[in-house]
Image (cartoon, rainbow, N blue to C red; front, side):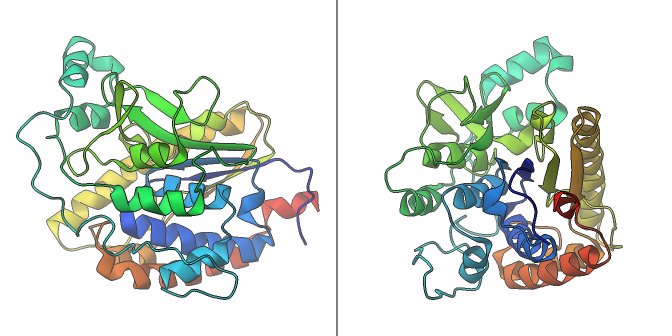
Length: 324
């Protein structure tokens, strides 16, 4: 049963690198089938990092089936021929050698002067060396689906980044946010500190919004939405049992991110909005491994997400159906 058009639904897409994008697209496809719902119909789309890329594609009118086809290298009839290779866009599975300079001296100074005002991950991003990686391929992708450069004609589409000087969160596309093209906003949201060079817009530099939150779900508290659906590659509620030290560290970090998103979900729920959270489960984590930029696992991650998300939703009454 499809949802009534009057139901106000928000969609939050979190950060998670190359594999996070693959997982999100697979999970979105399974969710769209289970809910009989087109994610492009979301009243509000909030995207962070990889989620900003997927969110921008949806806001520009690309459907989930097209995104799945693109992940598989298929151009189906009616699909735009997108000249973007997710396996090479990031430049490799590891970052290029960074510059021998601190990423943001002003953010580091703010951390020293006001340590309680700067989240730990944001402080570390300021301390990270200045990245050398380029997001030119991503810029080309956005220009292909949004050639005039104008903000998409979507009710609300926000791309989340962090001001690299002040450590403040910026939701590009929202009222009062700095003016930016969609390509600039998406690149800023994806600029991982220490990996990619910060993106300069006007007289400010911006980096990955994930330095402040894996989802920025809390921005939707009090906006009068009926339901918010969150796809967050950096959270999990069912874990595998990795044997390597690096993998165990990643899972510990993941638990911290899950706690953060649960706190954000609590704020949104207390404002009267229902929240559905989806994140990679045990099988997904086994497919992902420890390096979210390892494009060699992308196909496996996509196929696993399609299957595991469908299975997870099979016995759940879709929240959107309550309005139909």
